[in-house]
Length: 233
Ligand SMILES: *Cc1c(COP(=O)(O)O)cnc(C)c1O
Image 1: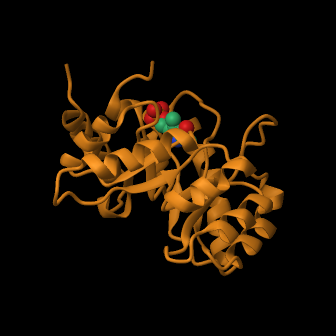
Image 2 (image 1 turned 135 degrees about the vertical axis):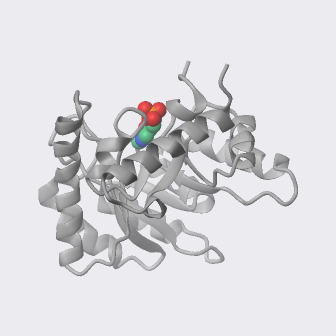
Image 3 (image 1 turned 180 degrees about the vertical axis):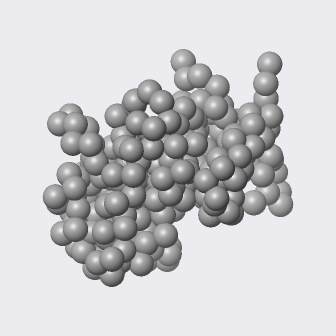
């Protein structure tokens, strides 16, 4: 039986080796622990092992969990930072704006406008990544590359959002080279937006099975679930 702290160490070691091979500084890459379907206690264990950033896909599950975690975390723990990484519906934007620190799955302006309007005045701006569908699958979430520049310009202008970068989930492919090629398409879009004047610092791509290729292609955040918490039911 491996434990969450053991698994976290294995993932950190993978990230360090990947950075080493790719000539990158390990401090440039943040680990987002994807805790969807796992309970608050799993998050508390991960926090105890030094993990700070957590990702949730399902809004209501995530809000319930983050409120519980806040109550049960031992005194003196570092406060977790919560990222919403799942598909967003209009009727959930108020919950997201009220409780999360980041949203990585913004893929249309209407959702971004609602998040900005609904962000409570006392909180810092909601940190946002735009989800891009870089390989063009028709049934996937994410803005198509064609629509990305206009969406980024509009999101960046919203008062209660801070545009930080891009998130992408390329179609799964086998092998480092093919994975890397898919991630490089996302990296090109990120570079394009930076050349357009957006001060971005977050390129969120890579999961349990392909984080090495993502790091090689320039990811600054990898989103890892199963390799930390185990298989989901
Ligand atoms: C579930 C999920 C992950 C984590 O995937 P694993 O394969 O468990 O590492 C990362 N990103 C998103 C958007 C997810 O939905």
